Image 1 (tube, rainbow, N blue to C red):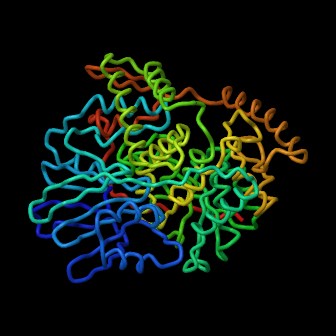
Image 2 (spheres, one colour; image 1 turned 180 degrees about the vertical axis):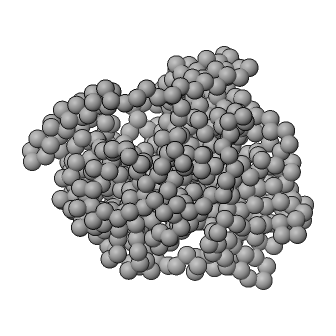
Image 3 (cartoon, rainbow, N blue to C red; image 1 turned 45 degrees about the horizontal axis):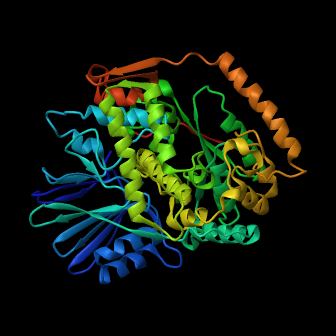
Length: 532
């Protein structure tokens, strides 16, 4: 579903819809529109937008993306040109077709206009392969349709209003990734940066929600939110009649914080097809758990999410970018059967991603591992795009760990303080220290990683050891009780892919027209309840 649509030649060439609240600032010769949610440290967003209009030039776009925090779209008109760009990680999408001179935040809005909806099978192969590497996404700026392109995180789109001509420009970002060796200074700096990005004085006494799961990311954000906002609440999504470890843990944290837990319950038998439409068939089936939340109109004034933390605060098990690329190609071969040319194209696409990252993200200190973390964050932003768009249909969702100040702070953490899931105490160390300092009781509560969100120490060692035994028992029980998933297969002239039904929405939307979801209005469901 789109937030905006542009078509050259229309009387009203730029249209906003789907009930979005669009912030606009205009003067005699220019205007700027903001869709989504944004925050600026130290001033209001409107004042920030006014300053942009006064002396805007292309060279400012990179700095705007760094200082305007949030997940949003910017459409700026200066004289006879429209400039379109998104937040720092390009979490909000911008698609365009140069030939037809159209653009939208929705892929389906453009794709659905073509009478002959020819698909690029390689891009389907790439999308499915990436599922087994990180997240299912298209690499680069190309999509399932050869005619439709997507603006990347280091690009902007310029449209000449008199001719409809579209051009794409590259951006460069300077990043201070110089490591802070002192643990005390590092924790202090990280805490200060997170507080500045999370604390919005204009919303201090407004109704605030944080999405809580059993993981580390949402616990980190929730701790910072609840130390500042006076009317902070918790929420979680669940599936009807389904037990959840996330729900069990979230309920415990809610009890510690003395905060009600609002539950948005999704009925998979009734709402799965709605989920596929909301996410345009580009999101895995398992994430349908969020559907009732997407459809609920009356929510908080700001809704804090917990995405991007894992990609920022942990490391991949690769020493070089080349090692990562080779591993991804190996995984693609493991899960697909394809023409050899497709594996070569997949490797080339990955190499192009890293070439662009090297040239557009200017690190103060060259570091292969930091480049890989930036790559992870960009891919996560592409994957999260449909979720964030669905959340922002009716709400002000804000994922703070996807903003530039927090990313830069994360890149300053020395690798001795980062770790993988197998490194026990070092895994997510800095966020664990932060949560432990802000609310010790919250940090000691169990997580879905089967350990507390507190640093490994003599006092927490027993919890870590106990967690390892509970983890083995939990997954053994799941293997015994879980029903075998339905298997799907996609075959084209050039590749074959079989897996569980995670890509059912993708198949129905783009390949299997005979079983495509029935058309229905996307209405509101009130499947939510409060748990005190």
